[in-house]
Image (tube, rainbow, N blue to C red; front, side):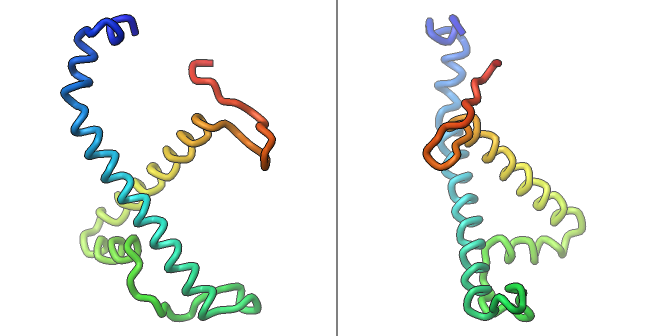
Length: 120
């Protein structure tokens, strides 16, 4: 920690890897937007073409283009690729959830229930 503050080797490596971190951040933001778009398209499809008596189950998909569905459908053509992508999606969503809880803590409406302190 002292080395990072004094301009040591770690801060130089971090400075050199900064453009890659920005690129990775932008690409993960695009992945998150694709998740939001897929969920939105699916929810609109279920809301428009189903009802509560059916349990919001769709018998046919009316909106064909959902980004994640599109990628996973074509990933089925290569055997392990779809399993790898689903595993990566689960890990990504879990990591985002843990990071969010670590940053803001656990809240119940406006009451802060628990604060997660790293290293404790």
